[in-house]
Every structure is written in C-alpha cells, then in structure tokens.
Image (cartoon, rainbow, N blue to C red; front, side, top):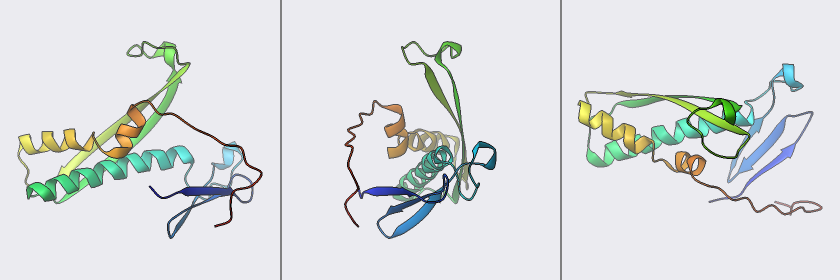
Length: 145
C-alpha cells in the first residue's frame, strides 16, 4: 500500500497526501478547528462506507448480478466499555459502527444477503475489526517527498 502522509497547516487543518492525491482533515469550530474539512473519524467512516460499496460492486460485477448501485451510511459512536453489554474485555472504551446498506437493482433476496456478507468482508472492515499493531518511530523530520 502506498504511504500516506499528513502535515498540520493552520490550527487543526491538516493536509494529507497519498500517490497523486491531496485531501484535508480538520475539526469542527466548536472543538477549536475551522470546519474546513471532515474530521479524521468522519474520514474513517467514509473509508469504511466506500470500501464496503466498492467491494459489493466488484463482487456483483464478477457474478454478473444486476446491481445498479450501492448506498452505505456509517455512524461511529464511542462509549465506555462498561456500558456496552456485548463487550467482555479490558478496554476502557469501545466503538460501535452502525452501518446501513442499500443495494439498488433487481436483485433477489439471496443475492442481497450475499452482497451484505461480502461488503462486511471489505479490507477496511477487516482492518477495523481484527487486532492491529502499531509500530511508531519518532523522527526529527519526515524524509522529503
């Protein structure tokens, strides 16, 4: 996977680059940002929604199913782990991802269920739901592009 870099600009506004693409993150005004771009958590929700939509579409195209489009919405809520009955671990907080999908086109019930299953196996979904390990190095500066 290509490297993604981020560099803060004014306040919380942050420039993010990967390959030939540049995009931005920020925070809402009520938390000290300028609300000039989505928050990083909104971008995470967007990455999940986009990945699920693309994965479902790729699968339907491979199967030659009559999928006309995919609509996905994602909400993320952070809550205390003790308040989340389904969690049995040591973490202080958990995140609940509420995903809503709609498949447009003349699909039968079996195809819709299969696409729902496949969408939940997209790479971003798997990266979020499985254990992740971070290796972080502190540098004086990142190498020049």
